[in-house]
Image (cartoon, rainbow, N blue to C red):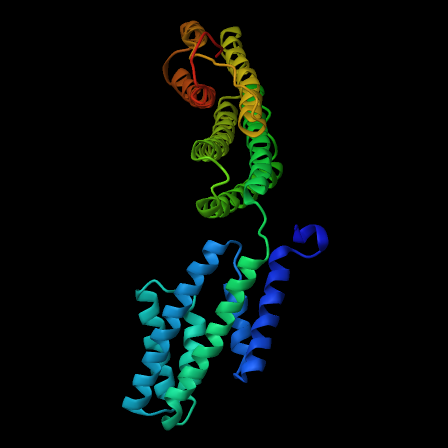
Amino acid sequence: MNINRIFPFVGARILKTGAAVALAVYICTLLKLDPKVFAGVSAVINVQPSIYRSFRNAVEQVLTHVISVIIAVVCGYAFGTGPLIIGLATIIIITTNVKLNLKQGVSMGVVAGIFVLDAPQQDFLSHALTRSYVIFVGLGAALFINSFLPQPRYSSSFLSHLGKFNEGSAKFFVELVKGFIKLEPISAKDYEVKRTEIKDLLRTTRDLFELHKEQNHYLKHVPGEKQDLWEKYLDFNVKLFYKSQEIYSATLQRLEWRKERGDPPISNEFYMVLGMLERGIHSFEKLNDDLHRYVLQGEPLVPVQFNEQFWEELSYFIDRWHTRMTGADFLHAFMYVSAVASDIKWANRSIKEFSPVKTQGEV
């Protein structure tokens, strides 16, 4: 049963949260436990994207609650009640839970402490027990709903976002390299828009991968080798995205350097160097398409080998260019070219490392 197909306009987690709250309040009504609102809040907190996170959150909340109630009861019996004592207990509760790395349930722990200390001294224990009952009812309702209602397969959503992330990061990389070659970088506004879009997609893709790994830990529906391949591919695209930003920065620096020197004409030898960079980025586009189909569609990856001939040719043209330009001007220009060439080389070689066998290949 797919919840999203039955209720296409409401997310599965929203439905599960509503069901957990309703169940928690209903159980409290049957058992005549008050305040019911705490059971509802506990249910909301513990409805998580995965069963693993739900159980982890529940354990943390139980520990936080027990610690907070004990602190409140001790403070109440030792110092009595009142605004200053409640404030002191709140400080101790927060500090203790943070020190124990139980940060998720701190707010509920503080509420539990205030609830206990707000009662008459002779009712501390009964209030603490009542508060615990409703909290545990909310926990149980959330765990039951999370386990009973089917969860989405996060692997499918992750792969969809991974494909989009690769398309975005590869296109961004190619566009910025070509901008360097032609000295026509995209505008700062377009750059920020595209960078932000890809960064947001990266964040979502990473979150989905973490959810998939948690789910796969107990479902075991994806072999470990395939999951490792997905993670390696994700890391490759992350690095590609960050190298793209380095290339854009190098392009702006190159433009500024040329402007300071009156935009000198580009020699034929340097055009040959730029032509080699363009050839390298075309090779990247083909290799990236092959890798995309291999990882996401299961198509065979044509084995390729590190071809040093291309880089030997690039070195040859750089040497010819060096005969026409020397000194500081050459060093500055060479610095920008070598940075971009190094990024292209890294991208192509990284793709080839996915090949199971290395044979005669491309750039």
